[in-house]
Length: 243
Image: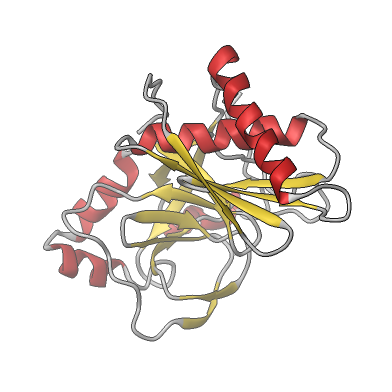
């Protein structure tokens, strides 16, 4: 699925989130419009140079606007949020053209210990699970934990994928996982309860680079299958956007 243009203009609900943040929620029946709105608003706030606002973190349908209460107030930030929406009404979306990433994956076995479990739960063959996982163009909706994980709408499976009853204490970097109706790649080794279908040999996180991960929300990603014997051919290479 790619980000779609939409003429729907969601309404905004604004809530105080502690003493130093506002949570702005886009409300409409169009999930794509909600997502585009909060990311456009987050981008506008990040570049507007408003004194006291030092962070805007968009997700699927909301954006957390962080501010310094010694420099500004929740009332002033609320006014800037509404100003941003009026500016976007005038200029249109601030979403840039997406870049495309292609991710090699070894599925199953030690690389994807939950592949067969997911296939059984979905009533599909293992080959069907892989085919559905690789058939889709994913839009990175937001960055999550740990370390800038690319959060995406999941594959076109018949039913949501349940999380593991007993989460693993350590999931390797590069794990390609699903849960519910979402998909993700793990940039770093961390505990996790998502079902691991496979692993990419590419490095996603590089602490010596700025930014630490190569993608941003709105970029597009596709997976493709490689045999286990090719894993080492990609090992040590960094995930890069297609030219």
